[in-house]
Length: 332
Image (tube, rainbow, N blue to C red; front, side, top):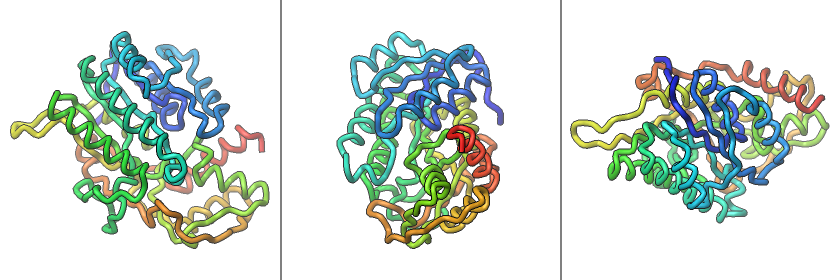
């Protein structure tokens, strides 16, 4: 089920972010007009965000505005003047562990800002809002693979709790105002231009420098690593197919997992990275971190039934592309 987004004007929030940059490029390639926004939060190196944005600047159909979605007046003005037909909301405060240090950033950037985006979509009669949720919402669930039908009322981090809140907020706007909204629960996204606080970047830098890497839960954690191009394909296809209110009154608000449908042990992930880099890692084994989940693993049957797509990129292929980008970008 292909996407047809010609003659659309898509707002991409977090356009200088990892997934946001890739999503904006894919939407432009589909013929959409794209407006990107980002506030360049210094949670990690702003120079990387600037470099991502530079890959978009000058592309036909792309415009950019630097702004903070947590500011209600600025966000209302953005929607009032933008005439957006669709919205891809990827801006957020990421990171599970940082939520233990700076919880206020998550309430402001993930809850307040999302509320302003919902209000903007409502008043602008946006045809479809697709927003980033997270596998973290599954929290204390232990039944694998994770299914969209499972409970999400036991988050183990504030980050996860804010993503649960986003899903509930979007559902209420669908119920009250008929706003079509789709939440995508991303599972451990990796690839070129990734965040420097995530395992691929952290481990690659340390291995090449001959420094130890901290391996939590003795390397027994399992993650459903999902290549960024697969994530973006899911975003673009989903955006072109908004949900509708059903005859029984169910709101036009749906949730899909989007993962690789494969739980890989962290030790195996490191083994693959070592082979690609041609160097061995110095592994510093650590206990489980507060807020972390021992395993994530996505059931993707609902996504496949809705848009005819499932992620296809193997971890070996995806990491090879990441390593090639890393060596070129950092000249190592």
